[in-house]
Amino acid sequence: MEPIIKVSNLVQKAKRRTILQDISFEVPQGAWWGIFGTQNSGKTSLMHILAGVARFSSGQVEILGMNAAKSEKFKRHLGLVTEENSLFQDMTVAENLDFIAVLKNASHNDVQEMAERFELQDYLAEPLGFIKKGVLQRLALACAMLNRPQVLIADELMENIDLYSRSLILRELKSFQSGGGTCLWAFSTIDFCQYVERVLWLEDGKMTLYKPEEALSEWNRQGKMYQENALRTGCV
Image (cartoon, rainbow, N blue to C red; front, side, top):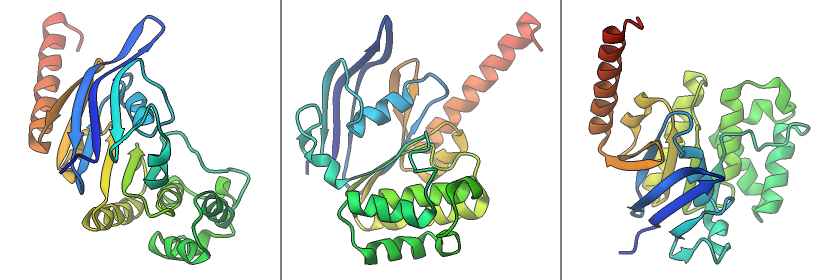
């Protein structure tokens, strides 16, 4: 079976800095993988490339068997949640859903279903500036799923949100996966490794594939090493 996402020898450069260095990986259908990286690791750059909203210097990216550098047809089957708030701040929750539905050729029934699944009914008339981040993230994911995507790409979906919104989002991600969907979720909080099947660890533009428990061990190893170095140099 062909992988849903295939990245080969990907390089991304910006001016004199190399952001992504010769990255290769394949994601099978129905997988739920994480991309972990701290600030300036190249994580968001990779997510933008996979979503088809950023170009890259060299290499090849295939989504659903389509060359992402030559075709945008795969975007019809893609759901995207970006780290930056991509919702319309001057609209209400309902207006955001309706507007995105038009862009994605989704029906009114689709809008109603997403509002119910993400428990947005009590917020439909609210402007976005008056609702908390957890609800905003629920709305962002609801909008991303209006077109019934085969692939979901989400960047920092659950950072600093309330526990109820987190549990609801996790429930919907599991439902998406059980229906055959493929999810790539980028995060910078190591504890989120527990929810995914594999972790693509980005560090200084280079990638290593780990099982969740291996990623946690690597995090602990690095933390111990930094602490020992700090003690030796008298920085603590």
